[in-house]
View (cartoon, rainbow, N blue to C red):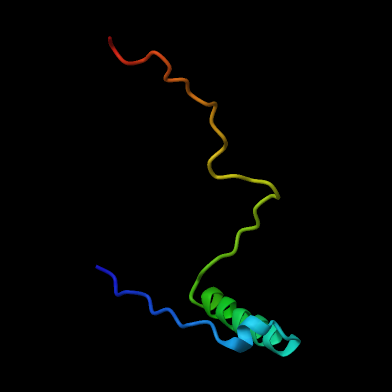
Length: 67
């Protein structure tokens, strides 16, 4: 069983979306990506509009129950 993931509450600074805050988020994300790649992770570019689960044709269940 895996340990529960700790979730930090959103700070007022994060809600403000100031340029300084955005730069901090970008910097943190860049650090996390570098760590991920250093551990052997890989990034795959996915084509725009790709869906893992394409839409299905709607099914009609009208009259499917026995009388």
